[in-house]
Length: 183
Image 1 (spheres, helix red, strand yellow):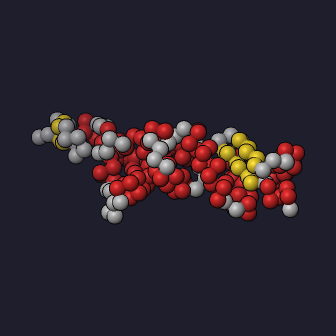
Image 2 (cartoon, rainbow, N blue to C red):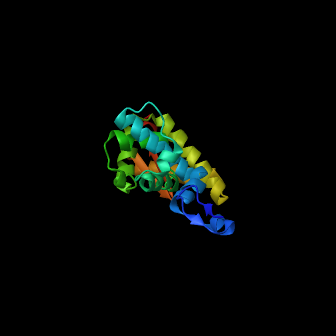
C-alpha cells in the first residue's frame, strides 16, 4: 500500500511519512488563512479584474499554482509590515499605474501612493487616520496616545509645512496640516 500527496502526487510507503511531507503546494495550502496570503490573493484577483476584465474570481487553487504566487504573497506581507494605509486602495494604485509586480514592495512606490492619497484625502480624514494610528501605537507600546498626539502637535506647529511625515517604528503617519496651520 502507498500513500500519495494530493498536492504533488508523490507516493510514500508510510502514512507517517506523508503526514510530515511538506511540498511547496501543500505549504501554500496550509498557509491559506494567513493574513498576508489572503491579502496577496485579494491583490491577485484584483489584478485579473482590472487588467483582464475578469468577471469571475480566480480560485485559491488557481492562485497556488500561479507563477506569481510568491510575488503577490510577498506584496501581502509587505503591505502588513508597513501597516499600509487603505490596503485595497494601495492594491488598485499599483495595478492601475502599471507598476511591475516586483516593484510593488519598494518604498518609492508606497511613497508615491501616499503623495497621491494626500492629494485626494481631506484634512479631516488624514487627522482621523493619524489619531487611529497613534492609538494603535499606544496599545502596542503601552503608552498613552495623548503623549504621541502632544509630540505631534508640537512638531506640526514647529515645522509649519504643508505636510508632516513621521516615522515611528513601522508606522508612517502622514498628516495634511495645511488646513490646521492656515485656519
